[in-house]
Amino acid sequence: MFAKASRDCNRKRAAMTREEMQARYKLAKAKVERHEQIEAGQASALAYAAFATKHSFDESGLLRSAAKAAELFCIAALGIVPILLFFYVV
Image (cartoon, rainbow, N blue to C red; front, side):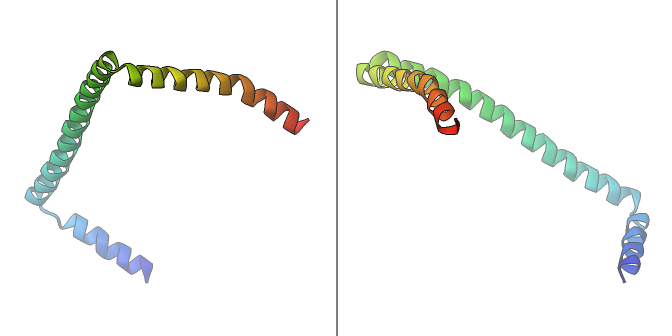
C-alpha cells in the first residue's frame, strides 16, 4: 500500500513541467528572502532596544540602582550556589 503511494508521488514529481518547477522554486526563494528580511529587521530592532535601554538607565536613578542590586544578587548567587550544592551532594 505504501509502495503504491510512493510510486504515485514519484510519478507526480516526474510529471511536473519546467514551468511548474520554476514557479515552485520562485515561491520557495521568496519565502527564504522574506525570512532573511525578518531576521535583518529583528537584528536592527535589537540594536534600537539596547540604545533605548541605555537611555532609560541614564535618565532613571531608580532603574540604575535596581540593575545594580540585580547584578550583586547574581554575583552572590554564583558564589553561594556551588558551595550549597557541594554540601548537598556530600
